[in-house]
Image 1 (cartoon, rainbow, N blue to C red):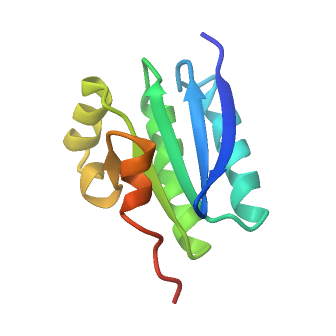
Image 2 (cartoon, rainbow, N blue to C red):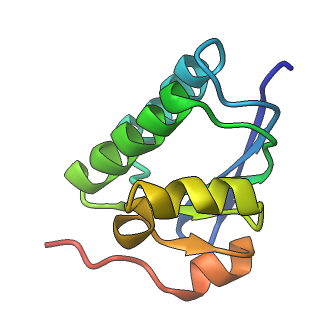
Image 3 (cartoon, rainbow, N blue to C red):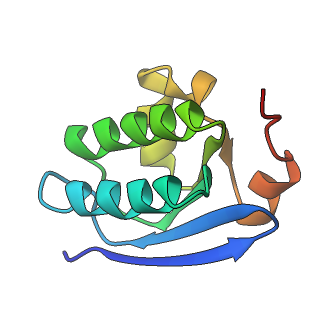
Length: 117
């Protein structure tokens, strides 16, 4: 399945809506798009993965790399998904402890912006 990415700006966050599978063929494209957002000066990113059915190890690695990239630029990465398979992967890898996970974009935004320091 092809990957479709759409970006919105909401309340100090770049909301990246992802549709399709995030796997070894599509994950690098997602990484490139988010890295462009961060290097352009927007380090606060919400990955909306509600329309993602499948994430492989490459996709998971990209999420980890994006978390590091946003935080190294003084921002944060948050993930939106109610998909039980994705939530289970994040729990099994303990990423749910480092990566804020929300059910909706509004809930992810409600946590507030990270403080820059």
